[in-house]
Image 1 (tube, rainbow over the protein chains, first blue to last red):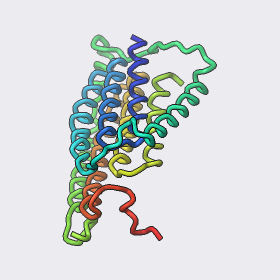
Image 2 (image 1 turned 90 degrees about the vertical axis):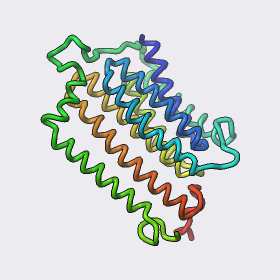
Image 3 (image 1 turned 180 degrees about the vertical axis):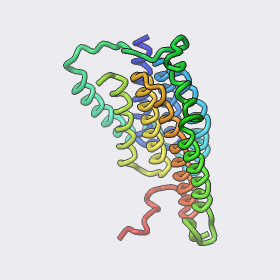
Image 4 (image 1 turned 120 degrees about the vertical axis):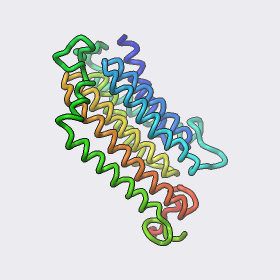
Length: 175
Length: 98
């Protein structure tokens, strides 16, 4: 189990290394899909099933789909993958920096890949069934936060409407 | 620092450096920003799972909602850039350059 967790954590960091080296956005979106998939696995490994599924559905299925088809705005005839020179040099520089940080933190300790104390699963009714009960608080005593979120989302709708309004108002001046 | 803590901290820093040292496309800078928000979501979720504070699990949900707001605003700016300048390449955004 701890080897699986180590693999998922390394996959998460390695995936974002592939995004941060700034390849063509097609490959960047692919790397972000990998990072969120590995992140879901990490959360599931710490017994956070609800938050893991929320990440999959909302982040991967909602937001990344939008980024994936927005990559059509960045169309170029020869997309640069991770094997092009500039991207590979950036990625290897970040990897070297990451190795230095890893050595600085864990180089002198005896690293045991344990999980520590994790939140109880289905049997602990005193914790309101783990983090799922905590999310239920968002609808009862955290209702003000929920209404604020909804108001913020509505405001964002109007922000995006004004951003993409043409006719010399807002950000599009020449069309 | 546990390995999971190192993982999301270095993920955040990598995304920040990818955003800072952007190359050609505006969309790849926005993707690095999304990676930073993802690392913050995982950080909040690991907080609530490892410290047994189940009420704190509201925070990653609200963070995800506002991250969606920010992503849509960024993509609206990207669409405006592509319509005004023809593409989202950063070297086209040179109106303030001397």
